[in-house]
Amino acid sequence: MTQSERRRFLIERLLAERPGDEDAAVPEDRDGQKRLLRALMNVRPPRPAMEGFLPVQDEYLREETARKGVTDIGELTPIEPAICLWRGDITALRCDAIVNAANSGMTGCYVPGHNCIDNCIHTFAGVQLRLACAELMEAQGRPEPTGTAKLTAAYNLPCRYVLHTVGPIVQGAVTERDEALLASCYRSCLALAAEHGLKSVAFCCVSTGVFRFPKDRAAQIAVETVRRHRGDMEVIFVVHSGENYDIYRRLLG
Image (cartoon, rainbow, N blue to C red; front, top):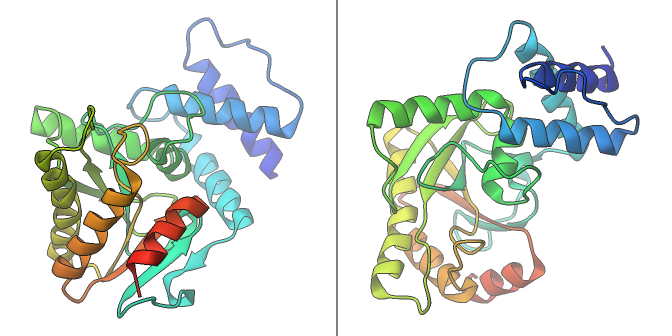
């Protein structure tokens, strides 16, 4: 199958799972199909995939990631001993684990096409990730507490694992408790990675998006906590915007 054929196959299978949408029109253009496929994956509940879906999905996602271009941790130049700063796409980074800024439900963002890191990671990992997270939550029997972390496989991402952590939601001025909880996110991820024998972790900017933690203070907490608790772990701070890059660049090196 070509990439175009895989994409249409996946769209048709996902529409077939939705009563009333089985005969919905599929856009003819590539970008329209990509938006529809991502939206369908984003809203799909956590459940096993129908027969034949996963092999095609996995081939499709791995090819999409290859086309984006994968960056290996070995290609990065440390800005401090064992600490790198990289502006790029965390879903295209090859290392032991990347960190996902999750919500307390832990099964991803259900807003179609939303550009949060949670949504991006679930999109390019594949539908297996949402199911794995749902199984963790079912076994736990309660929402994930803020400041803790869970580990799952990464499925179709180029990293090996995903560390999911729930950052604090800031309401108004930042409190000492907000700061303590954000630091706990970084400590928990590093501790869980070490527990599983991992050697490299890539952090996104936890809580600085829709959770509204001020970027400057969040970066200070991230850098201070990583310096104190990374042990022999290699750490990559991954930023998307020039603003965040400048903030981390001032703090590091």
